[in-house]
Length: 344
Image (cartoon, rainbow, N blue to C red; front, side):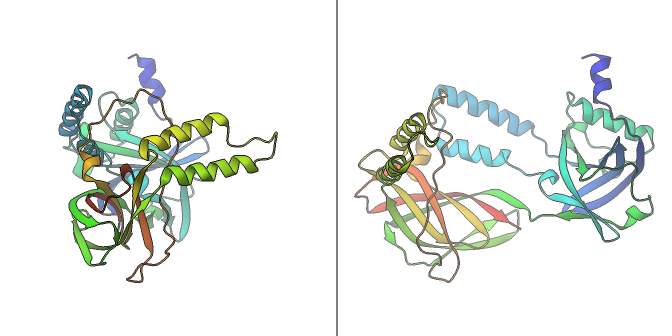
């Protein structure tokens, strides 16, 4: 590291309103450090607490060792991904409102202020130099503090409001989504279900979330997709760009992995207004994770689709398509509702 490295990470504010105001955004205790102008860009600077990731980093190392030994299960991998998938203020706030005038954000950056984060630490030094109080963050280790710099849409030759105006500042937010573990095991027959209410407790929202499984169906993914793309290629005008031979071969190879000829995939059709559910088969989660050599049609994504728009309880039908092969004559299946995406 050189002095030049540090200098290149420092901000050059042409105008600034330093605040150090504590507020709450979407349930997160936050510090509004100030609003700054650099050239024609107007930026809002925020600080908030961050989690201690020491334990998670140790778990990542253990998981990677298990992966290399060939002992890591898919279930262990998926649950570790859930711990890493926490969202930040960057994903929640969309702009500010001052005296009824709205200013949307067009970009944002930030991160945890680890020792290597020169921008974050330099920003703190600048703010401290100008007398900004960090309030509830004053005694927090810097490695457990996150910062955000949100840039407003438009070009500015001056800051369009005074410090007094910022007392009326509000943050505009979008609904918050959480990817949460559920770990609920289910044994069911293939076909139409009773539609009885099931539910799981979501700690993030502090409430129970109900759902209903309507159907568990078998899909001959390989045959259906092969027929669809064969037809597409036959109807493709000669000489015009379209689905290439290479893409076709990659897709067919991928389909043979998730649904070999003679096997089937499961499609779980369910009703749940407050979440999107992620089901897996017991066998799928028990499989050992293989190190991907970097080949295969990983760019293709397959999703199930229900012909029924509405479930037996009058709610919109949702589908979880399980990309793992099962026998075509299977009658009963052991599933796990491993996780869910829930919305505030």
